[in-house]
Length: 375
Ligand SMILES: Cc1cc2nc3c(=O)[nH]c(=O)nc-3n(C[C@H](O)[C@H](O)[C@H](O)COP(=O)(O)OP(=O)(O)OC[C@H]3O[C@@H](n4cnc5c(N)ncnc54)[C@H](O)[C@@H]3O)c2cc1C
Image 1 (cartoon, helix red, strand yellow):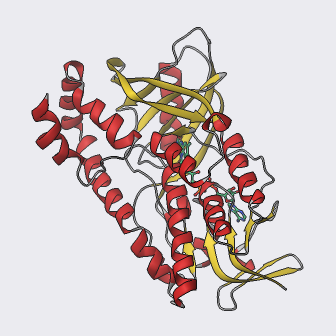
Image 2 (cartoon, rainbow, N blue to C red; image 1 turned 45 degrees about the horizontal axis):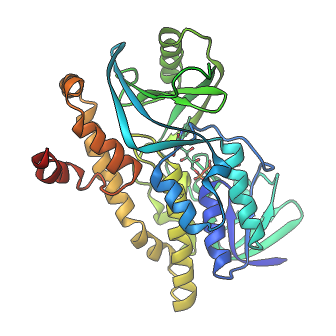
């Protein structure tokens, strides 16, 4: 039986970042993934400035130009078939291909000496919480700590019978005329408490939709949105789940087990941004494991929950803002306001979403008390 300090289920950004941070601290780690890298992951591929900053801070030597395939400083808002306004942001938005991005992170982890088992799809019965072992075929692995970084369909959550609250998102591709502008578009009021998007990539546009609706309804709405909004046919339409932002009850998990990223339910419920929170929670998980190992405090999930409390506070505040923003009469008035006023949208796009300088717990207060009074 091979023993590891930490076994990590899933080699997406959450699992890999956990592995990278732990390898830097010298822990013996193994990532187990059901796919072979490079692998595809359904995603809009939008990376905010705070995500790029986090990567450059924690993965020295990784150059953003290795994974950024496109960038844009132009955001167009649409509402009821009409372009409301165009916002030129001081902070650019970056776009990546997950095939490239996730592979680069995995390779970075491997270079630090981490182990990776690929094409190993774990099942519920493979996880033995009581014995702290994982079984894959004829092999058994022993662990001190277990990290679930296996996304929305988390086998870890299933094994612990944790109820999840995820929504289906739909995305597709349309070809890109390279002479055209590379603006980023957000379509409001096309899905219930959600939005439609149009993101530039190197050779195509990634279009999609997410909202708080059943899978069947969102598929129907997405197809209608694609048909009505774009002249060209939308190709390769696929769907995948995204956490809703509702907190998961992790009390069923053993004290040496941590969920990170989508598996833990971390996402910005307004924008659907998950990459930043996946990587950040991975870093915080590694910090909690290190603290637990050094202090002999076996309750690593307790330490981790303290570390991620600010993320949950931010997400809870974001859910409140979302309920206000997508309340029909408010959204209508807000869109009307945005036709002539750009300062609030720019503040939100640049300093809340892009850099995370302010979060949902304080951005309205900061804007109305400090920023607006200056303008
Ligand atoms: C349509 C769509 C568009 C999105 N667009 C954006 C965006 O533009 N920007 C953004 O920031 N976020 C976006 N997100 C969210 C983002 O994709 C996720 O938040 C992010 O991928 C979470 O990373 P993760 O590492 O937690 O999980 P994942 O990236 O899902 O990685 C999980 C890994 O676990 C592996 N795995 C799963 N089950 C098992 C198993 N049983 N055994 C072994 N391995 C397993 C998988 O193969 C995978 O490699 C989008 C999501 C969707 C659905």
